Amino acid sequence: MRTLKPDVADAISDAQADEHTVEPPTFATTFDELTAVIAQTSRLIQHLEAFRELAMVAADKTSPYADRKAIAIAAAMPPSRLYRVLEKHGQPKNRRAEVLPDLGRLEQHLANIRVQAAGADLTPEQRERLETAIPKIEAQIAEVRAQTATEQ
Image 1 (tube, helix red, strand yellow):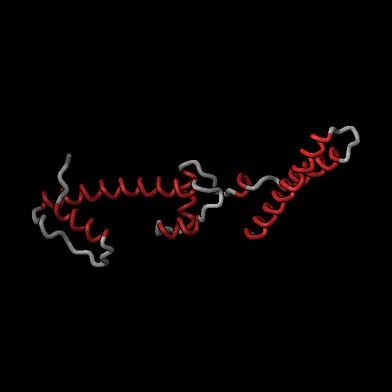
Image 2 (cartoon, helix red, strand yellow):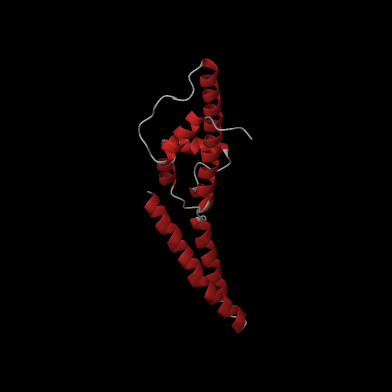
């Protein structure tokens, strides 16, 4: 295990405490000591940036309606960069097509079920199942319409 340079440890501590002042290294004074601090800081930054990206992707995957604006704000980056990061990790840029069921398909399915439910050759159990399905599909259609309205 590598020992954390004291100057790097102080910088991490200040960052965790949300200190807004940044001071130059105080323990490292020679060229070799300062380049070692620079190298360790660079490795830490690379690791934390990779970790941040993975955390952003994990946050986006928590829900198909995850608030990408909040993720971008937390990551202190513009939305365009967030979308590039998410795409790099396999997340779709536009989730609308993948998240929302096709409204036309749902409406057609509902129409088919209504036709079936009106049929005379159904058993009582079949009719009951179809009549139970109708309000569920109507609720899905209403949900998709409401989601579509809020996105516009």
